[in-house]
Image (cartoon, one colour):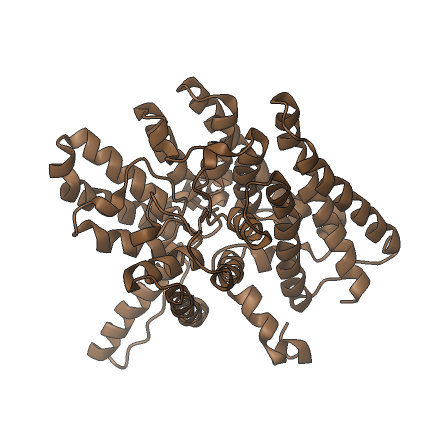
Length: 482
């Protein structure tokens, strides 16, 4: 793809991200805060976008799969950088690296923070942190495709490079229509949760910020103690429900709206998600029951934090690092588990675990009956052996990046438990980790080099690794990969 084509797409993304600052800008005006923290990046972005668009107005958009990887990766980097400007101008972040780290963590829906005094942020900046989760939840490229019909040409190549899960599909014939439908569903769920949280006693900024954070499967809060500050059972119940909803493939909501119940019933990943979540909640409830003293309290804590970790949201209303030792391996497992493909959740994704489990079962069968031919069935479709190779390679790449991130984390002088927890939280876009990175901790103590590595790992994790990894493949640039 020619350089001007890249500039044209970059102009659209830059204009879109800066346009979303209008909402926190309005809050800044309402609460009489400094509006310049948003006006400055908005003015710069729109001016740059206008210049780039004028320079490329006659440039046709023809995007191949190879081009899509580069476009998506660079757009996420540029979006992260422009989103960091309000943080830097607010004066509440010690350095440029800290502001960029917070921005990348927000837009990749990781939820890792360097802040200890979140309540000291201006209201507009605090909401902007959480809004970044919402923008990154379904993907800034997906939103661009939905709002900019001109990107309909080759738009599927961009969506494939950004969408989570090993199996990329469209729910309508046109990718722009698919993106619009998913974002309408996403926005509707966000509005519903905002209203419910306000009815439960939250102020509007708190309610919409937490709705942004939860539907985007992020984890940023407007309070230092996260949801524990509200000490509200109704709030915790509402957030638990919507965290589970955020971890479900959004195409199933479209199927529900179209009364296509068979698609939901036949969805292998969704059924596995329900079974795994139920078993984890049951196990955690029994483990922490003696500490909580009541079945209702233990069940809510188990359900909330299971939803928080499996959806990779990372919110908390109690410090689970203090739970019984038997609960800790389960919590660590959930850091890598992830939600469903096609959702806002991070992690490895349930469908990949299902594929590997089915492949392991088939391998056992081959030992007993070596002449038999076995295949994998997903969603009542047989012969999905193509996914086995893709998933196996993904697991290796995921393990490699996680191990490398754990090593980088350990250079900051932390223990192995915290290092591994940090790696799983960063690569899986969970945010909350283990040890010093539990609900009461943050990432401020890591050195700047580690923070920059974490930024790259968060973007790679959000883009499902391959989009970033392929950029370093010589074969891609020689034209041998599509």
